Image (cartoon, rainbow, N blue to C red; front, side):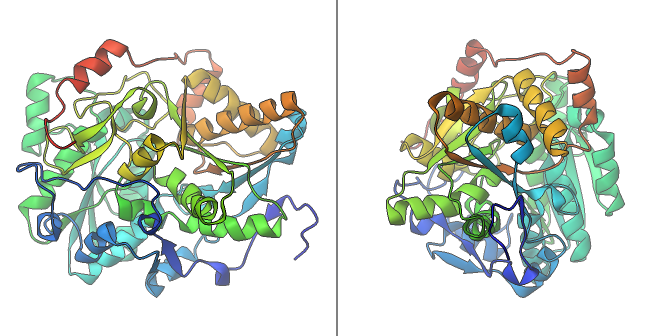
Length: 456
């Protein structure tokens, strides 16, 4: 293959990674252990067994640097992996920047995002243990779509609790999930005690990921043949996503380039970790100066305004307590926020790395984010998911800084999905109806006031 400054760097399916990278083997800062929501004590495998397959529990606490990818999982990966690494030449020219901008495009997966990288693995391991159904939550619908597809491939039932405001705003995501055979319920619902409790207090609740998680977890713990599946935040989920970064390392070498800065959007942290963690390993092992930038919305600013503390992963308090940057488990995002990335907390590993100074965090309002998305679409021909557009905004700003400084820096970001199911949000932007929203400080203080009093 020629390496003469290519625009599209592709590899054969023989180049799909054979192992996931587990950053726990190289973490430069400690990650405090998860705690039992009832006792406040560190949890053990038996505490997680009602929720997760035992192999996923083992991966959650593993310290092996690499975890082999089962061949049945790699076989499904072959439907879309390896994903292409692209050079955004037309965007560079539009910005008149000396920077080189690359992006890893995960939107080529069957459901249009990076989420199947872990959904397929989780469905496989649960099928191996004889589980019949997986329950989960979804916000914008990317995760629900991915798990619905994966459950279909491995013969499992799938029940998705979809945040009500997204259920109403994005009906075609629901249709996609149902096309794979999943059952989709708007959350909060009347099907669980958690949902009924929320609706009793607020019959018009727009829902939140925390509430939907409570509903999915409640259903999972009621039956032995049902498990819960999470699409972000947990260690094993981030680890499964590192196929992105492992491929990108090889592709950047084929392009005869190496990033000065690696960028990704963050809600719970999975797509950012998937791209960044293998490059962070290189930085730690080789003493490189690569920067890592995590980009979130000002409407859900867990890294830039949240507190680094132990908190529940769900609203009701059924999920384990983890130490993370959090806005409080009672957080409910504004209904006017169209940009996704709505979870109240950040992955513990990413939180620890931000706290330790290895990852930078920035937040943007949604109008500048959609402005960047529109420019990218018109130059590169790909309509990005609103979540991914946060990374594009930061990449453009980095390129403009390079222009101002006269530096030929190399920028790499993760284009974690396409926006074909997000046209309602784009319609609002194009008509000037999209409102910027910054989560109020008093609301942050109010939510943080009810954090559980445990841990350090």
